[in-house]
Image (tube, rainbow, N blue to C red; front, side, top):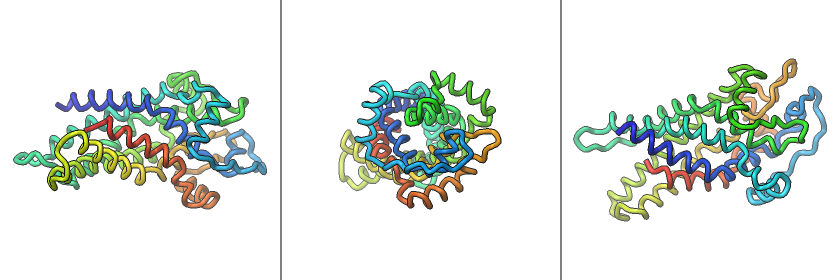
Length: 295
């Protein structure tokens, strides 16, 4: 049963990840909008603060259209190889482990799992999965963000294998786990809120007799779980994206010293709502993935 959870969860997540990749790419581009001039200058290998105009924030449709017009339709799938690897490592692990924990911690008489144990199962499964999949996550973010840079400053990774190999050679093996604390925290939040809330909401609907067990119940619980997960995780996701995408140049102070520094600089420069950049594509993707990846 445990192996089945790994396989089914992994396959569903890979399909969901690939089919929603353009949404994820748009989300990343939106999350990087408005970074301070100093950060943008450092990303261009300059140690001086340059008076660059702050990019105007635009919505997901405009971002998608701009990518299509300036980079071509294929650009909407930049980094899809990293998405496949990430889903294979991260989602397969977290969803399989969640099923195992549910089985081990369920009441032997009723087969039910308390909300507290559901959340605990989600936190543990999500954290382990994120640690395993972090290298692919870093590669994915960088490949998705590459097209927004001037041609001379792009990394131009040929695929996930090339990205990981070059990161190790140029920045050291530790670069593969850059932002890993954020990845783990986000994964724990998403897994606990999404999987646990899905189970809890579905059980409540059935117990109250609101709907019978079927497609309607599944879709309702999935959408509610997707909303909860998106609201809870978006701020961490914005910081994670910015930390993973930053270029670290030897001899030059990095744009961000860490997650807290990134959060403080982001809020100071762009306001607290900057932590919810990319929310619309995030929640759209979350709805779809919640519906497909039924655990």
